[in-house]
Image (cartoon, rainbow, N blue to C red; front, side, top):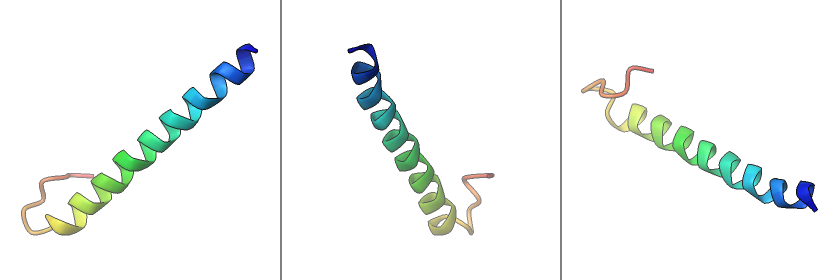
Length: 39
């Protein structure tokens, strides 16, 4: 029961991290001239 409860939370967190990473990559490429994302 506890494992089943924990699984969707980690899935949501993983998706959130993926979305943030994709957003940072998108910013990096779209704002390369301004260098707003120093990563």
